[in-house]
Image (cartoon, rainbow, N blue to C red; front, side):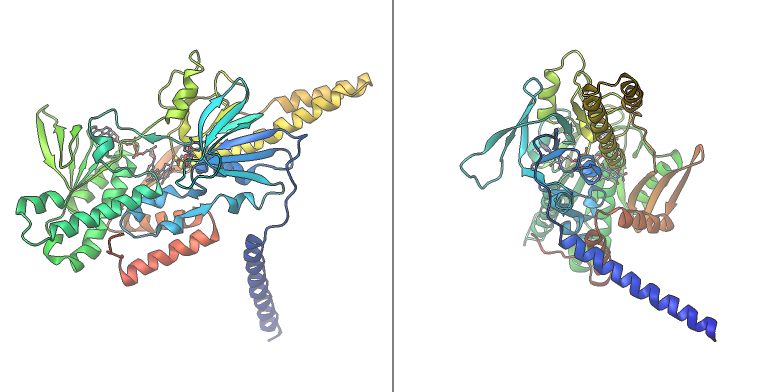
Length: 491
Ligand code: FAD
Ligand code: NAI
């Protein structure tokens, strides 16, 4: 009996402690303490972007050592892995974004956050020009900010290969507004197809949804669209749902080239079952407002009418990044991003660093890589601050013996370890509550696909979401979708 009482006490203590701790975490999140002001004695790091790389750096950087300035045209972090789910309302956009100030307000020193776009970098005067491109204008809309170190984490833009008509007629899937546009266009196509006396061939066109690019973005979008069709549109638009077609076009012989062969086969078979038509070895050559021109495997050209066209053929570097490359013609010759060394330092410069999709490294342009690089840079900057501190101490020393000992310490401090990437695996959603996963195992790899993998996919994303707020909102969205279905009203 006494053992039972002790156990009950421990349990009660645990529950009360847990509730108390959660309460403290929530209270602390909403009541950040006062912050120290900028210190003119400290070096200034300007961070461009508020995506995976920059936000990971911001989370880890020690602001006792530096003044930090963040410049980004969007004042929030976006959890991109769940963006395809927002195109059909499986998850709400607000559930996967988190304001940058939720990070910066918790740092020990004030961090300046400017919602602006960096338009030019001057590596000679060590300044960046920033522009307020929002609709609301004040008395100024451009400014110059000096830096000691600059971190470029501006990501990449959509690759179109210069194909005629893509920019004008296709929709992309990279940002919050892209997902909103896709959702609006999708519902618009369906409603217009349902207009009285609509011509049958026009109904077929409007209800033909084409996805170009069989990488993970294209595959996950097609999968979400399929689920929306089967789980919601069939109920609310029974007269039209059966006519809706999804086509995925891929230039290579198969989709998801970065995944293992068995998962590629599994995805292609699963898409076939879900009536998603895949055209491999097919290139889109031209895009018009109502149809695309494709070149098929045998070289013949054909027209394919569409209502909605989503373009997901990968990344290319942003104009601002290209402009910077042109200032370093000897070292910056790779179009897909800024060439960096093993310490993420841009080749040709001592004080500019590039991370994530903006850089051209041996790693794939993924969130995993960008966030590890951001975290790495936070450590690197701490070491640089320590090195500077030692150098100042040595310069003021007169005792030769003491100086020698500090010099040895300095030599150690200068020996900064290069970036090391640790791959945690690749995951993708493929529709009908199925996902695929390529996970590292020992020196090899484990591939799995199906409903159990989908449960794993969900738990990984839920735990990787940015904050407790995001996790609870996404979990609620998933429950809401299952219980109440998705919202089909046009935004
Ligand atoms: P981003 O996260 O794109 O951030 C760039 C930041 O720079 C943004 O804040 C932007 O506003 C800002 N910016 C742009 N221009 C300027 C400028 N001129 N000045 C200042 N700031 C600027 N990867 C995975 O590992 N797993 C996944 O499941 C996954 N799913 C994805 C799903 C989708 C739909 C997409 C599009 C990508 C997905 N990725 C995934 C890839 C991943 O999102 C990117 O690799 C990652 O976002 C790169 O991080 P980044 O910090 O380099 O750039
Ligand atoms: P991607 O570069 O991975 O794939 C683009 C695909 O488009 C390629 O397979 C290419 O062959 C094809 N393509 C190019 N031009 C074409 C044309 N004219 N016609 C037809 N097909 C054409 O691009 P994606 O999917 O946008 O991904 C970008 C990065 O983000 C990748 O590194 C990817 O790994 C990552 N990502 C990861 C996800 C995940 O892990 N679940 C989800 C989404 C993106």
